Image (cartoon, rainbow, N blue to C red):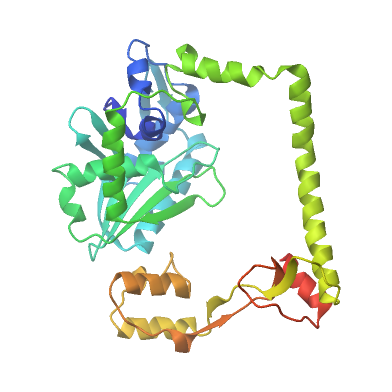
Length: 376
């Protein structure tokens, strides 16, 4: 499984957006060799690629060897469980999303020779409206998928790369997936749109032209971190408080939970006494904001199906979305469909609010029940 490294890659996309100058700062610094954990993860990636491309199961890959940075790792029975979890997860996800066209380990370029990377699994649904970008992670620390810059850059590149750009012709829904066998839940999803990919594309191209250096969590794994004066200044600034000020700041930090608990207790007591009729200047009891809920979700699905609305467009991933999400989708598509006979809008109870809140004050008779609702 040869790996092609571009100056601006998918794995460093978040760092590029946060600190555009990192690449220039790293030019003369030799890359760090991959550690044992990284080698093991790459070996599992190799197994997933072989299974996907050759229609095999992980057990058929036993004995395969992965080599990198002078290290060789053999896929053994001790590794089998992790790859089998990943293999089952990707196949189930492909079925759930009705993915018909699948590509494994797809190398794509946003700017040839400069920016891009490899997508672990790129898939297109049978109706060509849903595009999947799935990434395998074999570490134990959960990797967030929401708004993933790695996924965004991979798809921005795929949308411009001649080998994959045709996949986007009819796409309306883009699904980011992280398959992480060591994390509870294994499969983590987030959805976006082709328009947001275009927006990311614009922002990323702009970042590549900048040379700003910024310190932050994105510094982790940056080759230049040990040599960066901006990082040094940030660390030095953290130590400028001195022992006494640091102790006082720590004392304040330790009080935060206590203060938050006190504020919560005050709200509950104020609410309780006002429910009993005790007036408190500047405060009132109001109904919580009404929330629209399904009264007949199955009926709504049937009705929407009759209106030729695809089920995959109103479910996430298997059950129907909230009435608001469905209504927003229909509005976006220019569909005027009344959902009112399948929904109800109601408040979940009452709560405490400032006097200038736009909601009308209400009287509460069930004090104990109301207090429970307010605390939820």
